[in-house]
Length: 419
Ligand code: EPZ
Image (tube, rainbow, N blue to C red):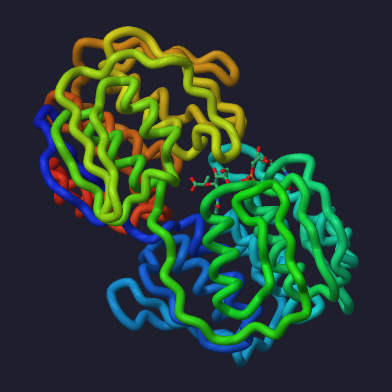
């Protein structure tokens, strides 16, 4: 079992390269099914969730091979199945994203219901109703989705919630539908723009991603392509918050501020000086952070729910109090109890959490509860006096290629131990 040991209390100084975006590469890996060809993904991060997606593709008869440090080549010519095993569906909750692409390619699909996850129930009712709108027959009795779509027909679909996954699933299914599909009320995340750019590189006619109306002209054959995945904005937010937590100055190569401007706005309000350009983002944090206005998570371009725990960790020693409101997931404060073991003062009541800044934090043995909660523990530990041992770090490996490598590049006293 691998642990991460952080010796906190020293300021950061260094630069790190930001990995490819987990939440972009996962739908893109599903989209490779639409090409029935060969795709080369550059800047592909080596993550547990990418490994799970590769296993799903291999289970469908496709092949994927690492060609270099961060180059993954995927060959979906020999697809021979349309079912995803329950074990794989349980391993990665976002595997539901494969449904639209399998239906578009095969005309049928069989997936078990992706379980909930540490964040609470993760319904896919919008995915299913949208696919039914396109003509798919979906029998979801008994925990398995039996789907048939001999002919998907493009039309207007209205999403009642700007669901990222539903938007992506419907974009992929729409590529296999006859005519034009318009998704109204679509999510606007940068990862959806990245998916649109990937599909366009494969010859698809997709437009509007980044706005709340996305259009797809289906029925176009898609072809091989080489594509560079966008940088991971949540990884970038993590390392900005690490600098804010410990103090110091860092440079994050490849990070793009336009993807995380709500996070940099809060860090600037807290007293960090942030400068960004074509090469990346520089962040200097000299003093203890100031308290900031309430932080409310919301669909993009609002404050990203994935950065809530991470920013909270950076604010634990702020001068004053900060209120958080988690509006996207029911159970996204599981990191609070672990932060309290380090001396944090965080009071949770329903969707709200109030952080009252403390003079000092102390190292303690803590346990990861979920992906971003685990990253938050590392961020908090950088500001704690003494040693913090973070266990159950497999959660972190789902979304960070190597958080120890990156934090060490930024000058942190961090190491990985096995025992
Ligand atoms: C994506 O999850 C991300 N995952 C999440 O990142 C991210 O937190 C989330 O979007 C919100 O930005 C990937 O991209 C792989 P949603 P997704 O559908 O698509 C409700 C991380 O840490 N909803 O936008 O599952 C849902 O319950 C992960 O990297 C329905 O009710 O999120 C939630 O309250 C965690 N019915 C809200 O919508 C549906 O059919 C937003 O969920 C679908 C969603």
